[in-house]
Image (cartoon, rainbow, N blue to C red):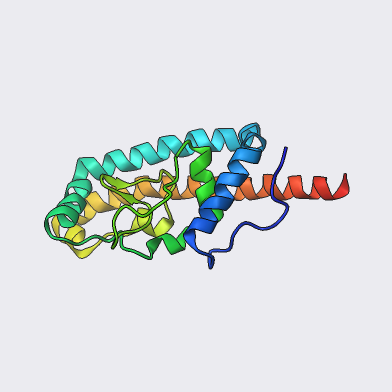
Length: 180
């Protein structure tokens, strides 16, 4: 099993380098993570939490407001540069979830991970999960947004736990390689 023995591409490196690290790590060592029972369980829980969060966003009208803003008003919160918040670990998590990472930007002014129908990633950065623009807060009742944030909190917590477990498994593997 081949796994990089160095730290993944820094968040300060270009997004394509972070993607390349995540892809190489996944191809060479995805099984290391997927065979870990805790990682497998956390991936399953995270998928469910993400599904619930996105369904809630759609049900209360957030998805429609975002689509309208992006397609009809020329605006988008998912602008170029937002991809700079994504570290290689988060991209690796997406690969472990079965997400194909893009090779090129789809929209010149958009986030590298923004596709024609929204975000291409399943595991998103906390700011992408949690951000509510003025249009959303002006059009959706605060109590309804609070309910959404409760659901999103489960997703964020699951992402944190998954991220920490993957790093733990990686560090454990590195130590094993160094002492073998």
